[in-house]
Length: 196
Image (cartoon, rainbow, N blue to C red):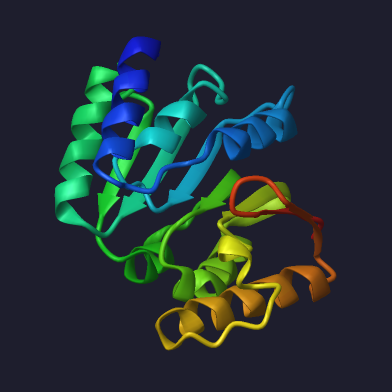
């Protein structure tokens, strides 16, 4: 992986106000996944490809990352960024709505990273569980959503996202096939290990 290019990609994303994985969240994920043999990662929400490039360091040599992006412009930027960072052979990008694409995927992943439309997290979770095996780790970023998820929040604009994130948290904490920890890093990270 080309670290210099990764830094440029990060700086450009921040400059363009494109939400990317926060440093402390990435550090927490790296710590969590350290010493695990990871052959396959599914990422829901590619943006410009920053997190997928970071994850490419965590997978084994012949490992693969599948990532899904709804925005056509970002999809092409991500593909370009994968080339620049010299990881395009490790990453496969789907263009389209994850709600439509996920049901067409039929394989099991070691890691599933959810970082897309907040209002769709419960749908993504159902699909993530289907695409999991025993020991799969499901990570959901921005789960505390600027702190709104834990507090009283009634602004109309964000109400749907907050409601669905709360629904996601309730499900991962009550589902007996999942062992979940909520980390207060970045904007909140839910880590669920599949036990079934």
